[in-house]
Amino acid sequence: MDKENRKLPEVEIEKTIFQFDIDRLALIEKENPSNAISFAYMKDHGTHYSFNYSPLSKNHDFIVIDPSFDDTGKIILDPYFETSVIVEIPRITEIDPLGFSQKYGCTTKDMMEKTDFELMVNQEVYNKRIDGHPVKVNICGNQYVVDPENDIFWSIEGKPDIELKGLGDYYSDKNRTYNILYEPISGRVIDLKKESVMNTETVRLVEIPDVRTIDPIGKNHATNLPLKFGLIYHDLKLEYDLAYSLDEISQIIPANRNELGQLELLIEGTTFVVDLNRFEFRDKSDPNNVIPLNA
Image (spheres, rainbow, N blue to C red):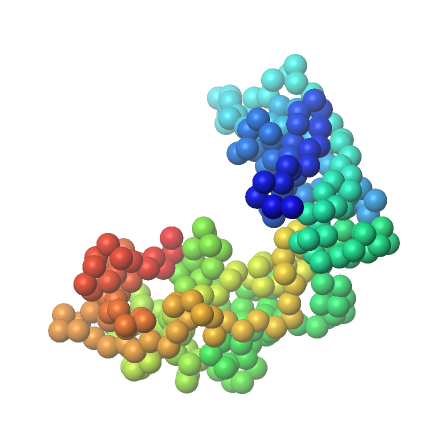
């Protein structure tokens, strides 16, 4: 069956029809596709899910659509609306068995004998992480252990540790990643705002996912959330290689200063000028072609 033309399964909640999207793992209001209910905030009972539903927002009860405020800034809710009701949702394997089996490569027998969580989340990695195995990352051949409580990559090899909290200028909220300049030999992160001269001929522009993406279990523990919170949205791993992406932002790139003292980077044959005012890499030949650092 053509996935694009396949009719999405439907679930009715308090007289409102929602369609289930297996790719987004969300219930999408049929008449208002911008309204999506995430499974991350539902309680997984193994046999079904439950959550507090607001008939007003048609979403989790803590989500308010187009709120009104009083003089103190508090949200005014319509008293004629029931603000919260507990609803139960069937297992995802029951809502969309075909889509589920295709996405997770499981059989009907698997779906009958195992829970959604057991089929959607890598159980070997999950159990090892629960038992205390750390998550490690490799950046340009340099090894680090992830500290989810402090957002630090601790070097295993005596290189400088990477404190992500100090790299906020290089963080993209949209992509939930840090775009950093990294010197492979020294293992040093180059802060363009602090360094007027970069004593290196070769650097990498490395994309680092945020710690919640890399180590969601550890981050859940650090923030006192249930350990299983949101894990169905993550591809759990104990090791990540951040150095050898096919994407241009992870390739080895020569760096030098031009006649104006600006830092220039040669990326895939194109020379980019580092613009600290706009915090972006701008194509020297085509100013409209840019790589934003914190878009």
